[in-house]
Image 1 (tube, rainbow, N blue to C red):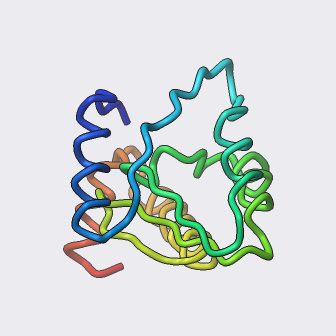
Image 2: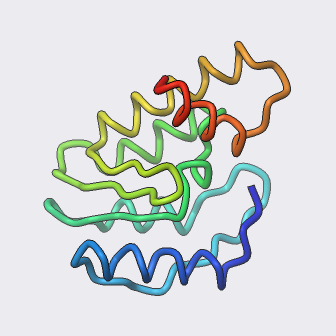
Length: 127
């Protein structure tokens, strides 16, 4: 998924304002292959009770199980609230893992459907 950073920032700033959260400028991830160095540092440094938001859950490596769980392990044992405004998803680590499982299931059933269409399918069908 490719949403310009300026649009992501507007979306996150508005979401934070409406939900009484503090907005911090996003860190741009420099990717070389499956590298999530910046994101792993953010997750590693989150304290118990803090919030993490990204414009979409699709910014996470949902289809690379080992990388996904490596990142999520940095938040295990902490009461982190995750926010993904595009999907209307707000919850804890278990919520994110369950949504990922739904995504993988829908992806396998849908064949070539892209992530944005899957979000719509999830909202419409309530899957």
